[in-house]
Length: 225
Ligand code: ADP
Ligand code: MG
Image (tube, rainbow, N blue to C red; front, top):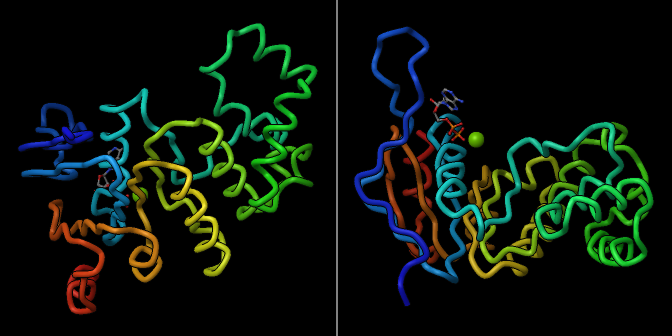
């Protein structure tokens, strides 16, 4: 089967803050191949390019990717239900979306309640996003990603505001419902438990790209030095 995505000699940059100066390099990738079925954890210190890489993957595979951004990025004035429904906006015509905003349809209520139950937010669906705790908002963002119904999950530290056990559980749920996943994580042990491949980013490059079973304590320590 052909890979889902292949990047070769790819430089991800941002414009310089100073006029006339060259773009600033965020991440240089010699080679990165992603196959369907991969469960990839992106690890690395803050500022090493994890979010930049996820945004690039999303840019290249927009139709296939469920997106779970680093900050939950909910619409604060909208209820959790409508924030989750936002994951399906592109599946329905505008008038259906507008009607559901004013008078939520029983079908969408049933679907979203079923999705919310295992995430522990079923009783929060009619609460505004700005009245939820950080952890609750993150669970709403996970539900919104699941409601996108896409085969590839791109998630940026999706469980960072949850405690370890809860995070592990929801991360597994999120991964189990996607064929392929690329997830930035700050907890390396968590990454090794749920992913089958680990990409370590350091000094604006890919420092290693290994099967999860081959990642040693020493490799991880060097990544965070
Ligand atoms: P991580 O997600 O690993 O913390 P990022 O991808 O956010 O890393 O950042 C990688 C590098 O790119 C950093 O040096 C950061 O300052 C820079 N960067 C990230 N986002 C932007 C942006 N929107 N504009 C300019 N520079 C950015
Ligand atoms: Mg980031």
